[in-house]
Image 1 (cartoon, rainbow, N blue to C red):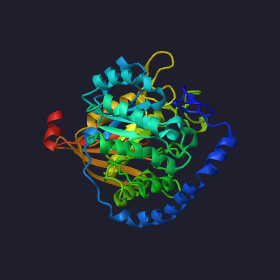
Image 2 (cartoon, helix red, strand yellow):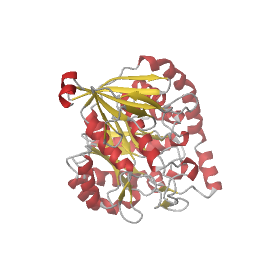
Image 3 (tube, one colour):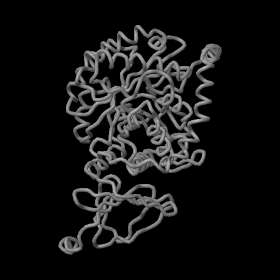
Image 4 (tube, rainbow, N blue to C red):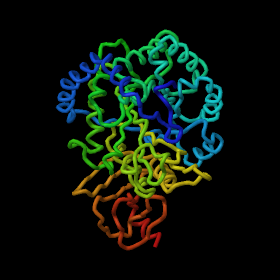
Length: 425
């Protein structure tokens, strides 16, 4: 990565571009593409809104729905042990094109993780965006070295932020086209997902899904962050998380350029008092306890949509936003246990329904022939603990109180057979 681009090793993202004249010059150069983005959004977004009620839910495989981002260079041995403890079946690994010399290190980690479904998120830099011959050479090297080991390649990321290297969707499309051409001519078994738009900026998404480039996606990758709005249920322009997912899945459904597959490959909340490791300002940061609540609720809302094939938490070990704090020693945050408990309860879940009554949420699913309900409320309230309830907290502790407190932290309630309930007395 070369000036004016610079990588921030604290927050695992590029710094903002300080050269404003360079940004202005590059945006002016891509003006025609930016106009296309605006016009396509003006046409496609209203159609997508009209079509939203007609999108059918899919049957989502819960065992591979829960995904986790990992850094193959950050405590690799311990990372593998933690993945086994969590029993997660799908992982997302970032790989930086400007560090192609670390490919052998990546291969070692991938071979150690080969029992898992792996998405490799290939991160771009300006050199590979401008030099497409270099991009083709390095992608060929990656596809050859990892042949048969990677389930999905995510080509490019965060394409609507200039600090990540792209100044227009057309630039991204030319970038993705190289990967697609390699797939067609040399690597037919490779699965490629793309788009890579961050946040609720679907005007960029429309341009990635409706254009005249001769490529197709094997699915769509979205970085659907909602942290700047606080809780996942909070509104942005009239859209809560569930509505954002519904609109995005509609666009995927009607697009001629992709299979009807949607992966959310990055999501988190930044943590308070972790500067300079937090990826945003302190204003957006939350406590460790709220972080765990929001994470679980995001997963539950996305699972209830039955329109998202996987959600990947970003990430396992990261001081400013991870399940584990690595600033001094490795410390498991409450969210680590929340994530572990979530998988234990839901990896074999079959979705039934979601009920929302005045900010009170009940997700119902079938787990090993038992009815499981998850309850949470945006306003604290209570619920009678019935004799036929078997109740567990967000982090897995059994709850036997007569009155259950329902609030920000979802609780798991199994509805057991009354005969079984009497036997347990």
